[in-house]
Structures are given as structure tokens and as C-alpha cells.
Length: 352
Image (tube, rainbow, N blue to C red; front, side):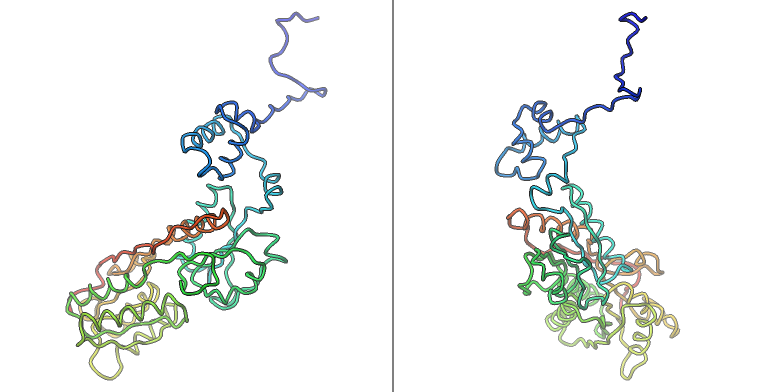
């Protein structure tokens, strides 16, 4: 026989196991924040803007964190007809730029209880197949980086909202575009090289047909024509790999006519191949030939000399892309304007 003082503090069920504590509900959050359950639903469903104040939204989120409240996403998604899943289509998984785009998109998605599925197009920038039996049933929307809208016909056939990253803004097939100021990046490269006295250029242009590479070529030629009409530029197609770029650069450096003093490369991988070509020909970077890249990948500071290149904030591209899709899904206007880029002047460029 036990006395009242001997009664255990814990509550046990019939088989002696400890009864788990009851999880907090939206009603508990509402009570703690001093608001209605409807307000809690608006805030935690990220539908509060224009309906409740920022202060009230902060109160609700704070109460939810303090109580350890987790919404029933399955029930909410069923009610809203949402999967809270987004597809990010990229040309390749092997390029660091797209990995960083994914990191930015996934971070923003997680803040809104969304998930991001990464899908490399089997044909690179070519047509992408629908990776699901029905994209519409599996997804809320699609984000595509550095691809043409026409390459996404199979996926877009599901009628999903599409946000395009680093793609032609004149393409009306997307609900929103998020672009870097690529043209300004190439203008910064051109101004830098002209300031060093260079007048003989070879543009190692990506052999991949893409809007972003077309913009680079056009900006280089336009800026040279505007700032230095006496400058000479020759375009040489280069594969987006070190070996192919090296061969293209060797051909450009040993071709007929005066040797170019600067190799302007469409990305850092091409630039790495160009640096190898210069050395294999017994020349020096930058004393004999200056080399520039584009992207500011990790290898830009791994090579010696370090590469002068244009820094593209890839994670910000992913963040803005996901934010744009969320805005489209909510019926809001996405943030506009191109994302600024920055020239990183390093050791691979010097006076002509």
C-alpha cells in the first residue's frame, strides 16, 4: 500500500510505458501569442502580409518556436492542394555554379517549408524530360537555370508556374525571370583589359548555344567598338572543359597574324585550359598573355597565378529564384532588377 507521497510524478499507460507529452496545437500557439487561430494559420502558412502586422507575425512565430509547435504539413498541403515541392532543372551537376544555385534555392525554400528536387537535364541545355509520371501531381512549380524555355516543354506541359534563371528575359514562356547583369560583367572585363593597354583579343567563346554566352560575346564586341575602335577581337569556339579549351587556346595563340595579348574566356574552366595552353607554348601568364575568366569558381584561386574573373553570386540567384516562385504562387509580383556582378582582378592579367 502506498501513501499519496509515494505517487510517481510521471504518467504511465497500462503496460507501464511513459505516455508521450501531447504536442502543442495551433490553439496553444494562438493562446500564447494572444491572437486568433486564424491569425496563427495566416502567419505560419506565410499568408499574413497585408493582413496582419509585422509585430503580430513575429509574436506568432516566437510563440510557435517557444512551444515547439510543428504544423501538420500533410493536412495543410492536402487542404491547399499543394505538394510544397519545387523542381530545379540545371544543365549539369558537375558545375560548381549550379550547385551553389541549388544551395541558395534550398535555403530559401526551407524557410517556407518547401523542398527542392534537383534535376540535371539529360541533354544538358537540350530538351528536359518530365522526371515524374505527372509533374503536376508531384510539384508546385519549376525553376530552371541557364536553359531555354523551349527545352522544358515536357515539364511545362503540366501547366506549372516556371521561373527562369540566367535566361533570355524576352522569352515570354516563364512566369518570372531572375538574371545576373552578365553584360555589365563583360563590360568590366573589357574596361580592365583596355586600361592595361591590350588591343589584340581572342574571345574563347563557349561552344554551347545559350543566351548567357550570347550576351557575353555581344557585350565584349560592343564595349570594344565603343571604347577602342582600333582594338581587334577574334572569336574562337571552345568546349566547356579544360582539355578542349586548352586545344582551342593553343590554336588561337599559334594562328596566323600577330599573337593576341589577352584571352577573354566565357568561364573559369575555359580560362584554366587557356592558362595551360599558354604555358605549354613556352609563354607566361600574365607577362606574355593575360587571361580572364567568368564565374569565380573555387578553381579561380586554386590556379597560379590566380585568375582575374567575374564573380557571379550564384547562391543569391537561387535565393531570388525561389523567392520569385513563392511570389508567383501567392499571386504577388516578384522582385525585379538584375543581380549585380563584380570583377575580381587578380594575377592572371597585367599590362600588355
